[in-house]
Amino acid sequence: GESVGLHLPTLSVQEGDNSIINCAYSNSASDYFIWYKQESGKGPQFIIDIRSNMDKRQGQRVTVLLNKTVKHLSLQIAATQPGDSAVYFCAENGEGAQKLVFGQGTRLTINP
Amino acid sequence: SAVISQKPSRDICQRGTSLTIQCQVDSQVTMMFWYRQQPGQSLTLIATANQGSEATYESGFVIDKFPISRPNLTFSTLTVSNMSPEDSSIYLCSVAPWQGGSTDTQYFGPGTRLTVL
Image (cartoon, rainbow over all chains, first blue to last red; front, side, top):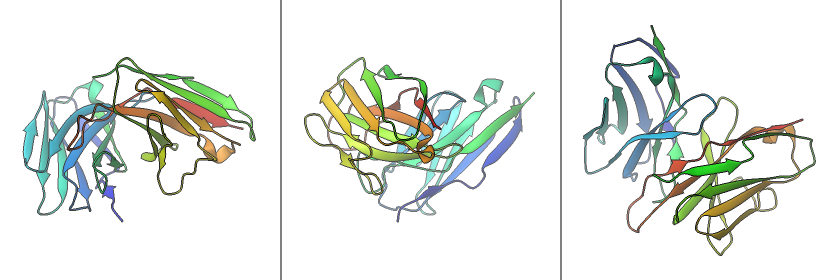
């Protein structure tokens, strides 16, 4: 079946450094991918998305890269801040165009 | 993005009872979804709430356990029936405008934290 997974469950970086969170997906039919940030006690917050006709998309301090050849997705956060500490989830639309399949999540900790 | 609220924000319930969770959106949306997030884990889709018809459930979830209503384009409820401690989770609703065609972004509510004793 389809699945979305993450390479690392936890990631610690120094404040001001760049961070990269990785995600592997298995369903080659997925054509929409999205990253969410979930802070403690809150619901997931949309960060950035990308469709399969693109390989890179940039937002404010964030960049998503999509490599369809190896079915890999990454989220880059530039100049990390304490407020970036959270769990980050990737998701793909899988077999249903409107349904999302979520990865396991990576906990990002920013060290002062 | 839409403003989404959920009630209650948290609850502690006794086993064998039922809890109804409400999800309210400040604008009309086409798609509404209900997810479960077990402690320390990722999100799993329970069902798609369809306006004016029965919800579409994912594998492993059934209507008798998780009845869902969606009377209009801004409101939905999820009931967790005959609860057991294994139902202790965060329950999240999400919405997507979906104008047709490709997938649209889903936006999440704050979640309802349920503890079953």
